[in-house]
Image 1 (spheres, rainbow, N blue to C red):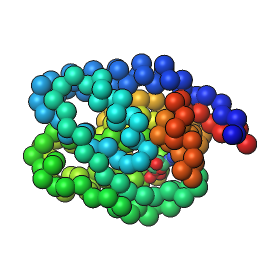
Image 2: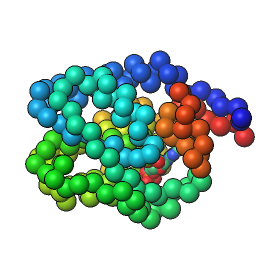
Image 3: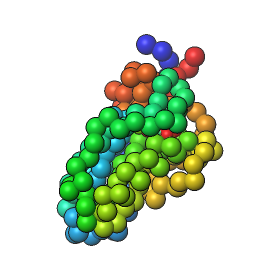
Image 4: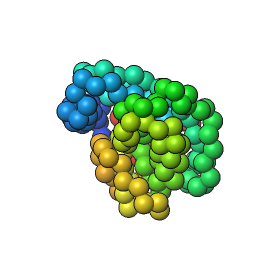
Amino acid sequence: MDKINILFSEDEIAARIKELASELYQKYGDEEVVFVCTLKGAVFFACDLLKKYPGDARLEFLRVSSYEGESSTGKISLKMPLDAEKVNGKHVVIIEDIVDTGYTLEYIRKYVADMHPKTLVECTLLDKKARRVVDINPTYSGFVIEDLFVVGYGLDYDQKYRNLPYIGVVVK
Ligand code: IMP
Ligand code: MG
């Protein structure tokens, strides 16, 4: 296996997720919230976030694809749809692993918004702000990172490394 430089350890990720969960709970209190996890990358984050979220939470999934290797193609395609009735009239939180150019989140946001949720916010674990092409700013973000290609904790490089418990950079 390649050498990986750790950027965020398991403990750092867990501590930040706890904070995010309580920020979200402060916002919604005991009102029902539908968390929409984008597959596959955000699945580790979504599970850990929901385990720390003490309110009334539902979990739904959708899958889009936009990435090949290290570069976003900008062409987003929907691979697994979301059932509109699951989010219509609800408080919805889109859960993303990372926002890079912003094309993916912009697409997902519009897709979910068209289903008329009661409220809609985004929560991403990582935000590569400097790489943004589209004007979109996630409501909640775990960590802002530099322009680095990161792997682990759900994030992959051509489907590899998702299972690392930390987030890191592959040393080439
Ligand atoms: P965007 O459309 O350019 O914002 O890309 C967002 C998607 O690309 C994310 O949901 C990830 O799946 C993937 N992605 C972007 N940056 C990275 C990275 O550093 N490592 C792994 N996947 C990434
Ligand atoms: Mg993703």
